[in-house]
Length: 198
Image 1 (cartoon, helix red, strand yellow):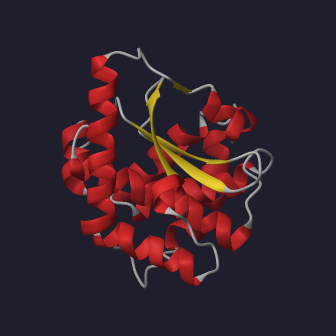
Image 2 (cartoon, rainbow, N blue to C red; image 1 turned 180 degrees about the horizontal axis):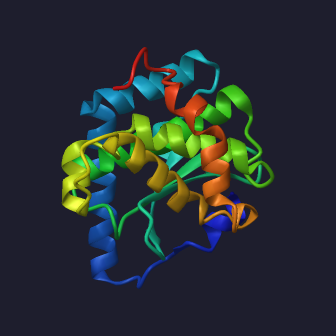
């Protein structure tokens, strides 16, 4: 995953606008850690599982290329980290959802040691869980995206967003939908570490 993410991030233009984006992203990151109960819960549960993270270094605000909000990756030493796309995340709710989404990947990696570059099914499962549990598919965001189907809207959104996320992993190329469909029912029902769908 580190190699994939490296291609998606850059230093940005290095101008005043980039500096403002960075400062705003850092401020929103700090607010999420202090005020977003879902983010706080996920950080705490990681600590209890023995996968303690330092939120000050675990999350990195960076300029991102392409249509992504953030990304989970493993550093060269195998430690996990998260990129927060300073040029795409526009408001606090967006930051809260993005951090929760990426923390669910971190949780999944902690409990299952996912091989992100070789196991498309495991990656698909984590994307399904992240989309379902982070708030990415809440009704109001779906309406803003122009998706108005009432029956099984949440499941349709989760499936669509998981497939979109897998498109960034070259190992899953051409089989994104197949991998998502193969594991969807089991992974959609897996709400850990939450007792139920938040």
